[in-house]
Image (tube, rainbow, N blue to C red; front, side):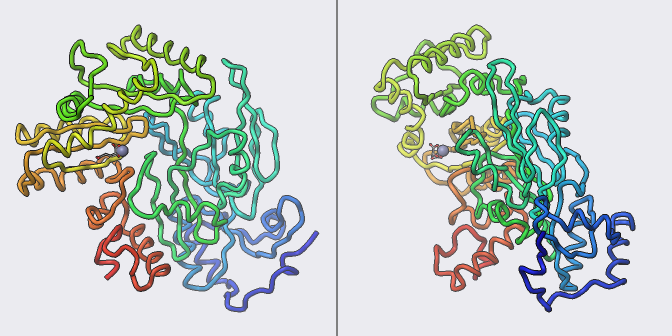
Length: 489
Ligand code: 2HG
Ligand code: ZN
């Protein structure tokens, strides 16, 4: 039974709390959430192995991000040291406030327990329980205690659940992480066991000075500047307190985008690409690229989807794909389809999708937008753009549908500022309004450095600038890019 005091010397720079501090905290949290009772403090001061013992005399139990922010702001001004802790101390109850049905992304607050998440998702009817791949609960760095009992084997400091997939009789392994502020400390080991783990798509964190950073975007792809969530993953509470995370959960089939969901369901882990192009994109490629040929020449369809699978068993993968194709035709999810018979035919299919940027270049001037947009709204932007621009431009939509990533391209004979002013800032405002990202994969670069606020909050961009100043104080690296010039000159 060790004592932390034996391992480290208390830094005299830290203040000791006094009665005024306690009154201040009681004002924010109410007296029952400001704990000084010795017996109750024992649990929080002891780690689960009973190996280390802390000597904190005050336990604060905030319930909301705002309370966490107020506490940190105050402690920072008073130079009071803080050890973030969650788990069985019930940091913020167990609410599950946001769930995006189509993207399958769920946002949960710190302290949220797996049982609540599962029953929530089950009631919503949005996710099949056995498909829930990874649930990360934000618990503390110090306190890996968790009180979750599901069909699981409980391990202190990270619970591994083994749930049965009723249909396939497979076992899936789920991990529940104990040490929260290092969200991935346990998951990394399990990566090897099951590669299906998805990173949290976002986090909300409170910085030491009380600033709340909302980086909870429920998008699969977002390439607008530094990926700050990774700064907090693994930080063990030393850079901020994570108060919420958003995680990916596979959605049950719903009316929207049945084909994609059906593909995920039927093809599972062998599905490696789900690309789409509209008839305007198809026309461009057929007209401008030599060797491009429509494999479904009967008539031009409004949309085309290119599906690729990558697996280890060719004949069974092919069977799955054939069954999926037939099934989708029977259910009228698609009107026609062809399966590539060999590698040459497969590359000729890919040419139709990958050749679009080149075909656009050959067609004249092109305005390019690389957007992440929640699936259900994705194509309305293309249609709205078409009606804004009328016949002055050819508006095409294509991209990585499986990632909710739309490449909206506007093709015109020549560059024209008047057309540009009809496209921008409309396209950015529209994306921002629908909680999308103004760059899913191409980045911010020079073109969007001053547009970054459409995708990131002022506070987040400010933190990016501080990191930039720390690592490149003379701003010699890739100047004028990524960050707005006002912050780096
Ligand atoms: C693609 O998916 C590339 O084809 C390029 O990301 C997209 O040129 C584009 O807009
Ligand atoms: Zn792309």
